[in-house]
Length: 195
Ligand code: HEC
Image 1 (cartoon, rainbow, N blue to C red):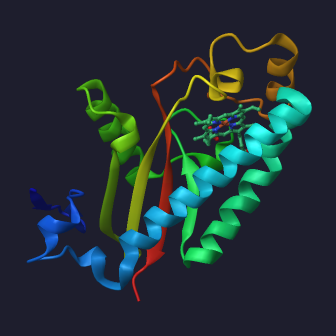
Image 2 (image 1 turned 180 degrees about the horizontal axis):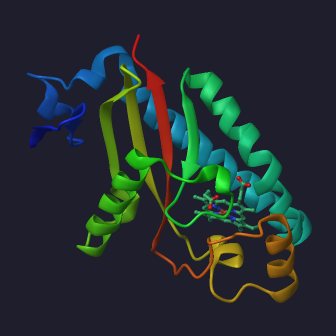
């Protein structure tokens, strides 16, 4: 796999573990990549099961509350468990707190390009050691595809009118609608300071 030193930090394309046997990238030290992948998986799976349970129990309106209040606490738990910070971001956000920084914007744009070129969004991930405020920080992102079920209920083009009104009341600057199944919705994003 290609490796490229950028002006800031070092970019290493994700490669199968075997290809690293002789010369592992620096973010492998301390198990950063394994922890990041596990945190993204935890957050994704726990959110999804809470979301589906809430949709079943109380419909989209109840599930909205899960996304709003439960999502941050699931992210916090996954962060603690894996000793890092994990969250979600996207180019088009519902919650402005999830707005991407410059690094995230660049990686998301790269995911969009790769998906347009035919990559399955479910396989896209990126890890890098970045320099932030003079400190080395491990950063990781994993693409989140839009599934037809249940994502489009709240992120698609035909959102039921009363649900749409509720969403806009909670998120007046909502940009996260109009997605289609299979499209890149956003990404899990991880940071961990290198010690
Ligand atoms: C019941 C409505 C609902 C459903 C269904 C839903 N979401 Fe969301 N989604 C939300 C809400 C509300 C937020 C804002 C959460 C917050 O305040 O952090 C959100 C935020 C997000 C974010 C974080 C970025 C942003 O826009 O703020 C991503 C990524 C995301 N959703 C992906 C998905 C995916 C993928 C699915 C399907 C598995 C899905 N959502 C299903 C309501 C929903």
